[in-house]
Amino acid sequence: QKEVEQNSGPLSVPEGAIASLNCTYSDRGSQSFFWYRQYSGKSPELIMFIYSNGDKEDGRFTAQLNKASQYVSLLIRDSQPSDSATYLCARGGGFKTIFGAGTRLFVKA
Amino acid sequence: EAGVAQSPRYKIIEKRQSVAFWCNPISGHATLYWYQQILGQGPKLLIQFQNNGVVDDSQLPKDRFSAERLKGVDSTLKIQPAKLEDSAVYLCASSQRGLAGGNNEQFFGPGTRLTVL
Image (tube, rainbow over all chains, first blue to last red; front, side, top):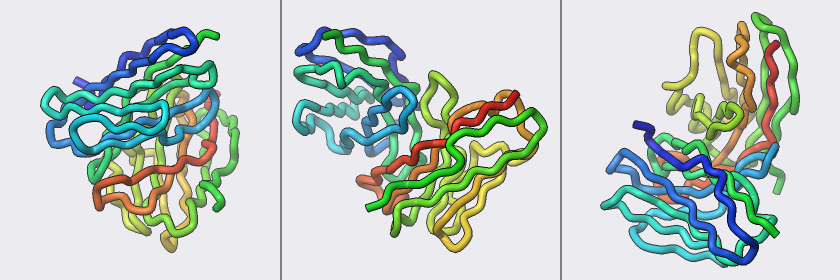
């Protein structure tokens, strides 16, 4: 079992829709999670981090953490073609940072 | 504020040759990371430095890979000898703190794309 698992996709959504990206993890002791966006040929850039159960909102992005069920999700509201990228979920926060393989998102205009 | 710098950006070598990558982190960042990202996969941590000490190198193939961070600033990653499976993008990242928990946001450099023929 991989420590951080993501569906590789691709996930395709129409412009203006909500994109939902999911991530599960195996270590119950994991504390913090990060969502990075990576455009093709570019380096990852941080979108959000979350370490408390529940939701955290930042603009069009909402991260959700459920420690009991060991999953993290990222919702992107009003998806734009510029959101088309690979989204990487990472476990961090005092532990060795472990990245998932990423989910490719395509937003169709 | 200048970002994480890496060089070279691209490198093509033949198998069994050696290669070195250089990274200059964001000024003041104590923690430096080297990742290997193979096409279609997420970044895999190779080594993590806290200042000039190694925190984690459990996934570094030590028979061929080596890394150092002299004076707790710049870092170099070396591969000797290279294998075909080493073809990947090598990413350097830095953060203000790595072990204190909480938000240890990592800032990534542009990466070095290595092709081993």
